[in-house]
Amino acid sequence: MSTQFDSSIITDTIEKNARDNHDRRRFLRNAGIAGIAAALAATPLAEMTAAAQSGTVTDANILNFALNLEYLEAEFYVRAAFGRGLADSDTTGTGTRGDVAGGRQVTFATEAIRQYAVEIANDEEAHVRFLRTALASAAVARPAIDINMSFTAAARAAGLIGGNDVFDAYANENNFLLAAFIFEDVGVTAYKGAARFIQNRDFLEAAAGLLAVEAYHAANIRTVLFARGLSTATRQISDLRDSVDGADDRDQGVVLNGMGNITPTDANALAFSRTPRQVLNIVYLAENANSGGFFPAGVNGTVPIV
Image 1 (tube, rainbow, N blue to C red):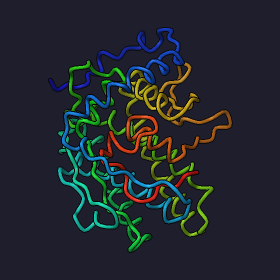
Image 2: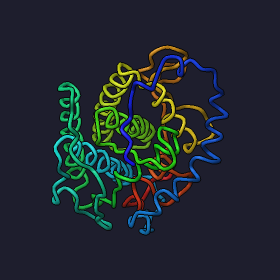
Image 3: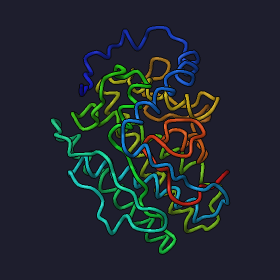
Image 4: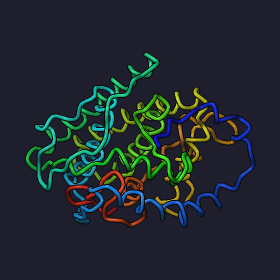
């Protein structure tokens, strides 16, 4: 059955219950993620096994890796806000052009949230076009994208829904916001991690601009989730991301140590970084996989190993 996430079940009492985050993340690593492959196996896209090569760190490879992620974000937001996908002319390029599974317009009950969605959708569509223009003939095509069952797999593994439930990211505002939360923090950390490897100063400035906008988006989504009392759900998603992106405990929900946590940072109040491999672990919903999750056939292009 399709599950609409009800914020009324998220209470301060649940948030304050003592719990060992390390144990939970270890459990997710050992048990929760193991169920994702089975959840995705029911989709035809799961049968696609083409994977991107890994190798040289070049500005083009870094920007194409970013373009893969921007395709994902744009297809999600444009469908949620407008009920359409990217134009065909914005999805061609090198590599195999894939289809998009899932996505539809959200019926927003709150005008402010609808406007947030529209603004972010326009930004993400512009990001795709900007990167494609910068890369010119070197731009990769949009890979196959799953923005349907991938959300269900992630929600089950995070414990947001039961093992037989379906998470519909487009059913209501809360579901949309939680689905957006999965992406936004990852985009910020991906751009941050890539910054020091970009050689061309013009590309570096552009990447800084992209990172800033993604950070604005992330702060917007995090603020609304906090205001709606969905902090426990964000912690569960954060734990899931942490369970696949490495041994450290860097990811953060919208509440930390009992206080609002709109800007997740390290001890120096700096945003943290992720490597391309750590990013892929999250979007593939599995460690060291070559494909899966939101990119059932893998990303296009050469993934820079840093």
